[in-house]
Image 1 (cartoon, one colour):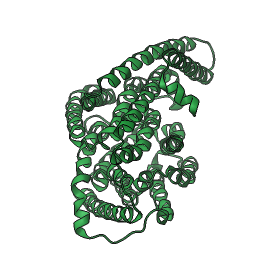
Image 2 (spheres, one colour):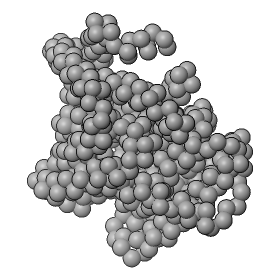
Image 3 (cartoon, helix red, strand yellow):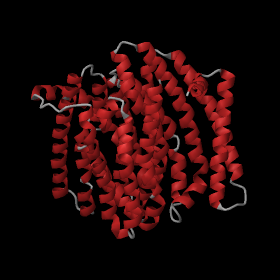
Image 4 (cartoon, helix red, strand yellow):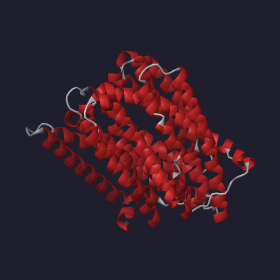
Length: 474
């Protein structure tokens, strides 16, 4: 358990760095580049994201699971070589297809679209799944930290006007490639590349693409929103969505870090035949996710009115409502992500996974078509929340054999919701204090956090929750 706790802490740091450090620059970029330029970046990045999905297919989850299931060094060398060789092939195909898009279909913002192609180079150099599979999260943290900090420094010192969007694109995407290349330095610590036979490479295509299908469908939830906003609405609406989404992503990636850490451990336990321990670990983590995600969801919605004007400045008032509408995603997506990485993928229940995301994709696409034109970014946010909710409901049907554990999870979640409502009341009462806006926001965050934490601790103590004993052991 100590290794899990260490990896969870390291993965949390990694996820915060991946999204948190760029978020430090968000207030600066919102003022220097403006919502329209950020909207252009959001739209062009959404286009290249489809090609990126094709390039990486399901490698992150499939590669992590496969590496975690290897028993010997030779087996790991062979498995890594075969999967990475397949990754190089699919990424090369994606690069060629994106070149075709640029030549024959791209008509506006072609320079930015061309620079977005750096993303595909990042895909071909991404081997983080190897380190996740061997449960070495320290490398991905320590090797990324310098690159992430340098990225923030370059943005703050080099981006000075709206016309610098091209430079911002290079900095953002180039940092990803640089970070990925650094990982190759530690590659020989775990594997030795052996040239694989094509028959072995081909054997990985089907299981890899089984995980790719739901990832492709899931892109509709997030990427399609940006694409359709740029096509149906305007780049200002895309910019509002881009900024509000970045705020919500910070707590969301922290929550998703639980699943990233637990995937290799759950795959190992299941491959070893210890399903009872795997189930116990899974539901304990899920209870922790519910407590954390509900608190974060209520917290984001509670402070949005004071957060947006301080963080983004004038002209971004629509982001207040967008953040409130998107805040339930922290609970919905947090639980669904961890259900997927800790249960569906390790248990090889890909059919349930695929069914859920296809249903969610259809819901999102239909609601986007209906809502984006009259409501802009708000319509996209509503569509995303409803899509994620519908997919999560389908995914949780896979746990129908664990009714007792599910009832316990629902019961605890209701308690957290009540505590969250009390927290919102405390925060909004604090908002009435006549004090500078920055001081008011800080007071809201501190008071809200304390109220929620005290409420949870009181409930855990009264109910004898396993979460309290886990915290004490830590």
